[in-house]
Length: 151
Length: 151
DNA sequence: AGCAGATGCTTGAGTAGTCAAGGATTGGTT
DNA sequence: AACCAATCCTTGACTACTCAAGCATCTGCT
Image (cartoon, rainbow over all chains, first blue to last red):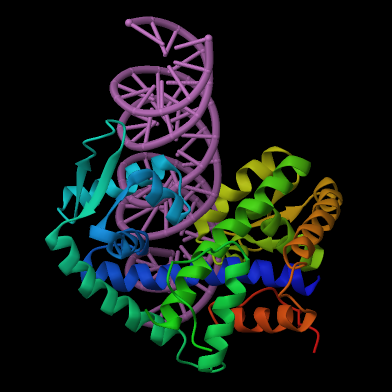
């Protein structure tokens, strides 16, 4: 088996393990999944804490229906609200509520901690993590805006 | 946002993109998903092309029920059969059929080609891929047995 | 003005997994 | 010999997505 195929299969395994770990900690401490957190985080990075739902889908690599379904529980528990556009009756915005913004701060702190733990053990040097991230970007993660790994 | 969290989120994105690509090509050419291929591949690596279902689950990072559900369509189309253990009535084996083995050969060739394409573009040097794979191993991918990336 | 096509969003149906519960079989302990 | 606990596997109910279809609204062309 080639290194390339080996790396591909390992990537799949690594992701499921990583998601499981985030889901366990985020779910236990804050009652949200990694997918929930990712949505909240992306909204938090947008100006005004709001985005058109279709743009959110694009930014997260989901379909429009994935966003509809994913936001529903967050709206239900009051972290996100739906807002309309005065000019265009088709579009609906997803916006962080004040509660949502506050919760996001806490959740982000937990997520940072989990990520730090994951990459704490060798062979992860600080440079490794940066390079690893850069390499992953090539694999389809356009990633999040405004982030450039430390040189 | 830390590099560690950034890398984690990119990993998730990269995996979904990679899976989509494999699924599209493998599905189009052979009618199987990446998950199907992974199951067949693991069986193919086992002595006699057969494993206890519970061991297959462990090897793939799935639950026992995930294996039951995942193997069902492969049994239905005749790539895998169920075998019993003469000594222990509880266990059931999953075994590649001759057809399954032949199909696996073809599918593997396609998978190798896809992986090669994915890692063909810069910044992927041969060493990068090997190191990348080694780093991924730390993230929970125990990976597949018997593979050591080229030095 | 009015229509055609594009855009934004939701919904129904399907897929791939999880967990929890349950049935069958085995093996160890008395 | 009889039971109790552990092991293997499947099934029902759920989650989180996908795609395809559908509805409402907007925009550009005539």
